[in-house]
Image (cartoon, rainbow, N blue to C red; front, side, top):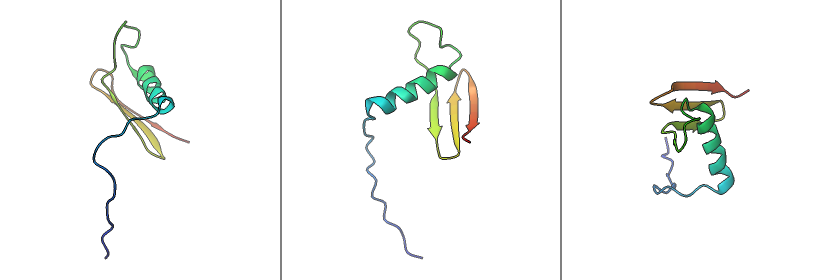
Length: 67
């Protein structure tokens, strides 16, 4: 079996404004503390072609299947 070379950089790059705004909206919609002023959700968003998974220490975990 031939090994496939990994060419991805290990340093994170910056999202463009549209993509970053989308992630912030997803986190804000999920967060149970979204109505508190100056609150920033500490959750995470994982998106793949089949599902959207939100994980938050306060709200718990939620998985949505993408139709």
